[in-house]
Length: 531
Image 1 (tube, rainbow, N blue to C red):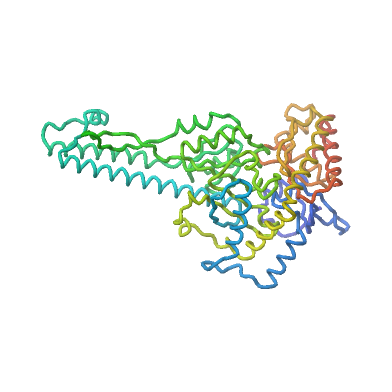
Image 2 (tube, rainbow, N blue to C red):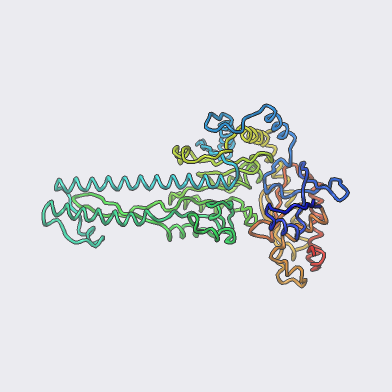
């Protein structure tokens, strides 16, 4: 299954060794539909049924002939990849197509501005950067408003129509009063302004906070890794970026409590009825709430309509923008273009990637609701390979294919996902002590196996923390089926095939899963674990 070389392995050698220990170190040479091929020892191609699907990147499978032909035509016409800082009408065409689909699905008319990127994590970071720019500009506007109120108070004191109230002086621990005349009143006001300015500086210097869900995965870049709940990925880099507060899933009320416990306020002055008073004003300390409608690496957890409604209401009240990460779940995989639309969640930002590139191009996009969009961002953020003609034309082709025949691809994702789920439930019914549950929407599904840490089989106990990878190795080795566990819930296998999935391919997966379940039921660790 593997090619060997006398040369040293310098490309992630530790990871390769780990894959080898599980029997997953296969060199694939070709892909077509839901199938990958490697060369056997006799030099012949060996087909492997691929349910990993590029972690959700292959809504139309490997090397779909329409997408490949389109790519070949683009390359043959010498379409430019590097024409930065020029007009890109093809990028606008993609943005328009995305808006048409999203507005239809959400029943809205407000447009979303598009910022293109190369990967899901990069698009998440672009959304985070934009949200932080928006937060900073809102904070600056608040500071300018407070400064204007200082000037109003000064004018009133000079005119003898107002003075600092005793309550305001006491509130800030200041002495003095207006009995000494206008000069004394002006001195007291400046003392108050200085104290308010000092306290506000302390609050405004606080680093921004993000909100994310427990079980979340938003990438492994400097910023996005801080939004990823798995401490193993996040903790070594905690000092490098702003921090997140992780919200428990499916606990309405928890989000409001976290916001209340972490909110910030600055002080403002109000001149009214002859008194100059000090009042608190909410300070925008929260940058954004970033969440997946279906958690991919967290175990294929779908947020409920009730929880989505709570998120929507609380964030609107606190003026916290919502960034919906549809990197894995979007592009029709759930049975609708946006998985979030199925639970009624409306975002200020959407992040799309993976299947946007049709399995060939590395492409992603961050969409910002027009009423939130900051034009300044376009001069502060850029990416060398983003928005190029090749990837944009491929993305447009994928969108056309999704929308073709009145959205046939969405219907296929729903129908094929239902058929796959039906099979999972049938296997679970026959092995209730082996399979803990099934989750997901459309063709983004998870199958959770019961913990084996107390197994009577020593090999199973020893490999309990890597159970999903052990099962994946067995399925590949014995049944030529490719799937992987989710990164932060390793007892859950993920299944993200294309809409081209056939009944025969589902039947083949069922046979493999039943074989796995039989070994786990019988505690036959020696047969399951690769020794």
